[in-house]
Length: 380
Image (cartoon, rainbow, N blue to C red; front, side, top):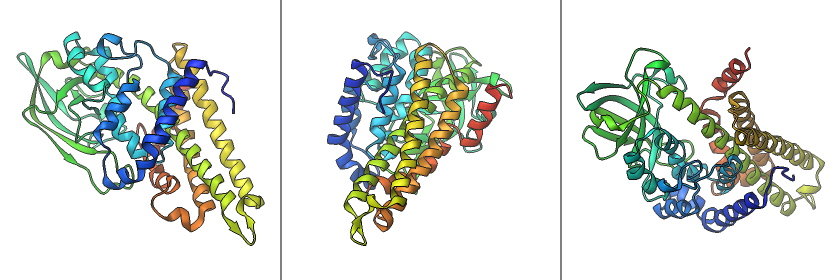
């Protein structure tokens, strides 16, 4: 379906990414997934494209401009490799660089951002806690002021990129209960009192390193406070908008991968003397899958246009994330059905996507929380 918002620059960006993913990622995605990691060279090669530099000044290693369409094109194209863990392994930094760029001191920006944006080092956002996921306002990790330092105690879990990152943007309570008492800090991995434990036996996203982080009297300089004390909740919520529309674009890319492989299989596979594609039941499945893809793509494009116009359509983003994850669930299920027993074997894009559907419905804000957020934003 033709994108009415496409420009020559955006089209060239997408082609470059698509060619790179097809040639350099997709052929290795299954092996990396089974190995449980991606080579660090992939971080650096993607960093050379500038995929994490949107909205960040060139002097800090960024692109110097922003474009929601190009952000989402990257998330969509990397998802087409059919292994969500590959994208997650490299993109933990994508949801952690904005608070540093927007709220950090010039010294922190100069010291951290060039290495992270280039892919030489990793960064992660550390918000989720063992006792609560989407309920950010109920955060229990605490930071207390001690002279010219903050002392952090607590735990974070399900942290993407958690075992290999060099820098962490950490939410901690510095004041009273609720959203007004939360602040953000930059914590470096080699600091005393900080440790991390890898999470294993995940259902999907095998190639992505995920960890529980432990803060035992971690002392960070006061300069590592990101923004104003007690104003971290607002920064977290603003950051979530880009994460959620990026995840929706990832759902779109994964759906397109499932559809492509389903069509290819239906043309090749013969039953009772004829290709599957000639069976009405299969054609109807493919038409329904395509409709979900078109609808998700239209939502993503509309939201990208609104964001480029300076709006923050939180309700629309929340609804799109739910629609995207539900659509992915439908498309992956139908793709598995079309492939039959072959789809149940590990090693293909459809099997991996079906196994990873639920993380898209939970990460970045669960479907239930997203529905409630959308209703509240709509004044209901």
